Length: 536
Image (cartoon, rainbow, N blue to C red):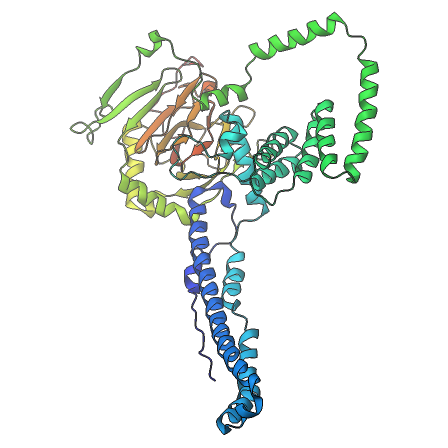
């Protein structure tokens, strides 16, 4: 008997969509799209492996069925069966040759192609840092947009195209990551969600004992001793021999007894102190809370009187020859600081060109260390960026010229066009674009002075989140593809305008692409002359 050869192919070339090593995937949705293609190709490779295994088993099955019938007949009358010389020959042949071939087939490893692909691709896979970064992004989105765990777990987010949900095991994993960061608040939220889904009957590999172990400790760390004891009791009902839980229960009971003695006498002054603290919390809005409220669209509202001073217009760049016959649409977003938006200011074709030029160069965005001046990554800036020069592409050169024509500022001393793509929950927390007085060396190496103004292109629509907000004044500017916003960072005197402190809100749903141009003081001496007053 001759066994057919089994052939299966895997296109190794298709599994190499990018040649760069691991580069913080979670900080850029643009780079994460490559992982989708990688996973798709791995699925194709896996299916090829399954087909090869199925083909192998089918051949073994046919051989077994054939031999089953043959041996049934032979065993009923062995001498009569072997009395036929052909049967005698074929028996010798089967046992000497064909059973050996079958053994080789059974031992043949059909996984070589798939394992080779996995080995090649593994060097480009996300690592623990990416998984932790993506998990922290979910927690950040939860806090910024006031989302409860059930909403996130069920994937009920605004503007989603592809709804997805978190399993109990996923929730447990989020809780564990929060736990390793000593973030017991989020540990409690996500362990409770995992427990809730298991209690509702979800089939999962997550173990209630492990969940309750983490949960009880997280609750204890937050000072809720009664709840910690209740959870530990539930754990012991499931596993009475759990060593740590038994030890914890004894400790909790000891602490509870001591607290009862200490709390027998409580004074009215303590109650009043608590009330004063509560009032203070309500009245005082730190920057973080203002920032998050603005991200949710709950910020300060401009008075009708101020709103009446905001206009939209056709703008010709102060009689710039390029725009006299074809002015651009401009509208006021805010009055102080003055923030204006230009509409339909960059075409879809230009956007795609800029993105294609930037994609291969995208690297984790950095910030300048205020003490050392060195560039470094930061947890409060989750994005990747690339820099494009005007000489590289006529499109970039044309964009630079457009910025100069419409702002009236010299772009020859400006920084290169920075292109940024935000990652999972991508954000940039409140910051200034200009160098403050305590940062005298901020842009010293450029030799072009401070950043006088910022021009920001929105190169994509964002389904939810992703606003540019100004916490000092309560302004929120929402992304709109093809538009750009512009504001001055410095007063004409050269002093910094601290009301321009701004932030990029986390992207809740969607993919945010922006590009910006920072214009500097040098070259603007006659284009924007100084004034005598510091704040003018």
